[in-house]
Image (cartoon, rainbow, N blue to C red; front, top):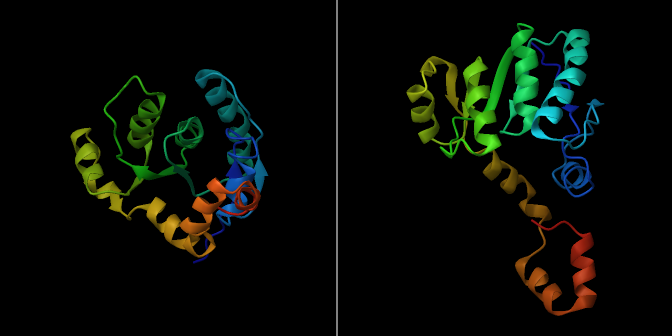
Length: 182
């Protein structure tokens, strides 16, 4: 069985520091599609992502849509997939702040409720999900993807000594800023 994955970038984060640098520094391949949504209020941005992602789902007919985290893109793409009858897989499921004043908390809870498969990054997440009525059969502990990312990037990290020296010496500082710093 082969897996044909397509990377769709919503463009929710679009400036160089929140977009291009992440792709470069983390070694993420260029997206197959960029929806170029940009910034707006939570409602407008979520709606715009849904508007632009729906034709992608219609054209691609995916077996599943994998979403990560708790941003507006996560809930928007999950909603489109769920409404189209496409399975939703949520990575970083079950994380909770228990602060409903945070838009991200609303995104987390709702995405988990409509997901078919939930990948958790910490053991407590299963407790949160079962308390919310999610069937534990749908939950799989996969470990902390942030730690996995950190480990894969460590060989490219600037040593702490160099970073600290750069803070004290402006000539070194410009070199550190143009390099990869984790």
